[in-house]
Length: 143
Image (cartoon, rainbow, N blue to C red; front, side):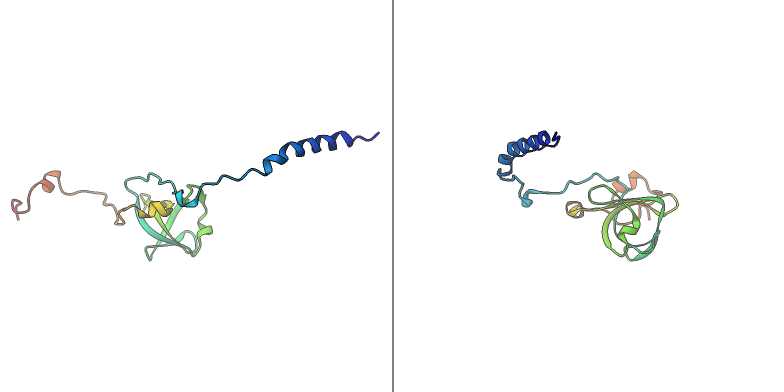
């Protein structure tokens, strides 16, 4: 009473049926056509270079800064990354700050996103001018 024989016969049939598929050529896209997707970032996001030192301590454009508690770092594939995994690596990012001033949202950029222009100055919280000031020529404005 050999119980393994039917299973071996079934395995042989499956292998025989899939053998012609192994000889088909692989159809891969050439790498020259591949372009990474460009994500949509918030309008207030700024550009910079981050080096994670000892979390939550970072260098942002060469100056000491901090990640906020609960900061989210996303890699080029939009997957979450722990700050410790980026220790001592210089990466180009877009980032947002929280109300306390710490860096809270970070997106590591891919090659296509790096090409896009982005401001890297700090956003001001207040605007003390009016839209009329921008439309009025400098020669007409009062001193």
